[in-house]
Image (tube, rainbow, N blue to C red; front, top):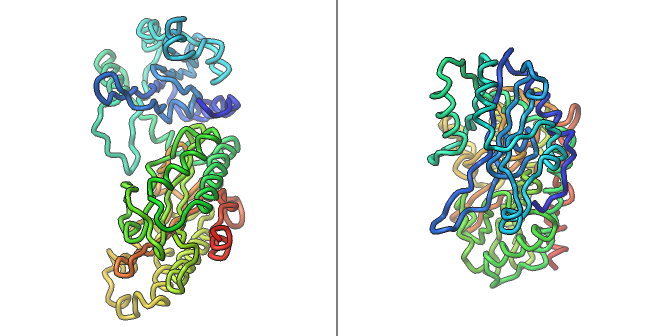
Length: 429
């Protein structure tokens, strides 16, 4: 890992919050992700299961966390199972967690090697009535690969068919959506690294550079500041490419006079930032580009004010739609007749702004959170309105990451990242 060691108080607190929601005499099991193969002996870079990381801080493959708060043996109320390390592994792969290092990382006092898992699990299951299994129930999830967690859940239900089964996910959805102060610090670090990348790019972009060169500038700055990578596949979209919402080819040359839409964020310690900025490739916005840009920025600023405790996500998007409709009329992209005759299921503004405005942010870029429940203090959301005009050859989106406060406007984690027209033009020139 490149990031600094995280205070294990975070993971101790997270486990305490989770176990407080469990049924009496139940245990819960969380597995690490697999290392996924590419071909021959090649593999994807390892990415830890976010739920296991959230509860333990363990960032290593072949790891299992078991929580059994009512276990008769006190030492078995929290257990980590890890792949046993040795000198050979240390030479070829680097050091893995020792039992002492696992305690320091997670705060879990009982650590066994993975080879003892089935034997100890048999003892634990004989003492428990209910077992919590972990499944991915995110509203955007579309998983075709069988995960390590999937295989484990199948094995567990076949071996212990008499146990009641419960789901960890609803508990985790609620817990993970409200951030601890230590998590907010990690998210701020991710956003600060993103800021450094963006400022580097502002001094790099000019006519005739290639989109992939801009992507490389970001990655250079991210890695040198202890980020492993982009938090998600970056969008570096010049000209009309910006009107393809998930454009990720990043293989075109930037042309004078065009705009460049950048949707890129750094991860730090598995936490994601999510930034979008739109800048003029030649260093100056045209009058029309500036009009549309400022309209998007106004929607973003007004939408941000709506993110307060008690707000319902669906109602919020209706209100943002009204803000956007007003701006589109001002830009003469819509008129009052368009609005009067609109389809309520697909309002007129959707022609130019077809995606949502906000999503939860945290360990995942589209983080866990139950959208039908009211927003709460210390939830983190993106705010990302856009206007896309293929007929005029450009699209503009602006995005910040904000923390809902108990009172007043949200706190902007990206408050230091340039966004105003004058500021961007001054830096680029």
